[in-house]
Length: 410
Image (cartoon, rainbow, N blue to C red; front, side, top):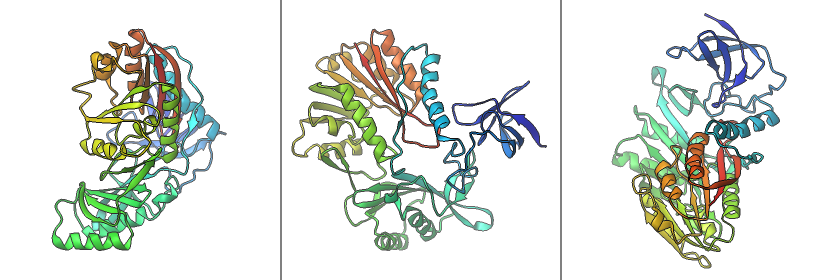
């Protein structure tokens, strides 16, 4: 059954919203002011599939990718740039308002740069046992096969072909997730979901890695083949990446976040970097300050410790620590001039409460989730901190994800 709907506004996930007597109806790939035809989305009474745009918004533009609308990786290639940027900034404005926080929000920083430097390709066998390698369709497990993605950085060239080769080599009935990361030494690839490799598979994958000139190939972090150690430069340091390591999505994004963090920390001589990962902030801050860095990822801390040996850096103390269960407490924070915390999407409520009980003069909050960011900042504001700056950063162009960097002072 085809329904005709009028899109009134855009939701925080980038879906168009039509109002109905039963409540809001969400339709991906639509824009405010459009009249559209839709069909039901099985199992989701509040969602619809777009069939046709009858009356298009004047803000609608041609997407840059032929897979847009089927691939679930991008939500907003069809919206003109100025309106898209205003909406993305508004995600932070709205989250702060909903938390009861009055603050001035800076202009959105474009940090797409050359594009994404890491990607996860999914390999599945579909109907008639046909192999498909690509990205997942929106809100489904269906795979959209691809041979090109315009939002990937040039340094990921060859990653899609390598993913297809790996999937064909393993010939597995099991779903595979193939993570590719562009490094200074070449592509670093980690395969998940294959199960233990037999001798034939291991030899075939090692040969594939050599033919594709991969820097390294691992399975669930276990080494299969390595031509050279994958590294990424962070400030003065070259970081030896653990297999499947987390990095900011774009090089420009990491650099933009790090510049904002450094500016907000200012002349602090002793800084803590909490949820530090492999050290994109800690290594740059150590060019002028002593740094205490903590993260639950043991491999990331080991990589940071190695990179911290770079000549010219001030001391970095790296600690493996679960900051959700053991947040750094007020007495541990007492000697610090500033604290930076950059938690995962769920935020850092326990650590925020510990910071709220401290006397740290400056706190820099970094987040990839506007809602949990607002919750954690509200905890600090209620304890007497003042929000002096909040900047949205867009390294996930065409998506509903936004990074945030904020400065709070006691």
